[in-house]
Length: 251
Image 1 (cartoon, rainbow, N blue to C red):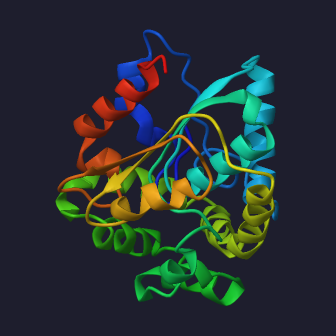
Image 2: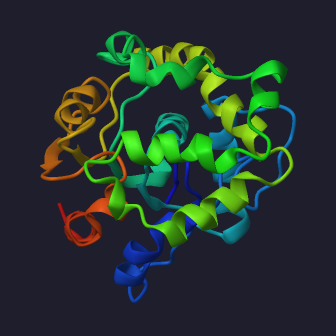
């Protein structure tokens, strides 16, 4: 399970509880985020895929079912493209750099944070991490009250750690390289494992199926009603039921 910006691996608690009896759960914090180390570079998603594969190797996990969100989807695509034999199923809920309607998405004024980074921008944020993150949690929710105060405090404290916001900005600033890498992956042919492409109707949901059909042949698209981008916080039971059913299928 791979998380996105504004959260950490902690976001998967509800889903992990539903799967723990018959699955080994691996929910790492991505490079630079949460409790992971915060190196100066290496935030392109191809390199972070190597982080994930290295973790699976260390744990002795040969084949995995990927459940990914936001930035984690981009890392997941790089894992599935470079090591397709190690991914048996993949669930995703956001778009991919350089794929399908990506240019349209980057032109949306709400996506201004894609280019936000560098030393001058970083100077604006220290001590104001909660303000910066509230913007994401509020504007990308169908109902911002569903991302509750306790979770906001928890994640804001993790993103206030030294180097964490710099690493968060670096995730977005790598998108140009990610788009180039993704086009290279696509040129090698579409993925063949079953893919669940789902998302909230108020954000990316209507686009995800179309995006994933650009990169995979076996895609099921689902839109979650009354939901924004924060699927785990906004509709935890609906998304848990959806993913559990998908992962338990035999075909």
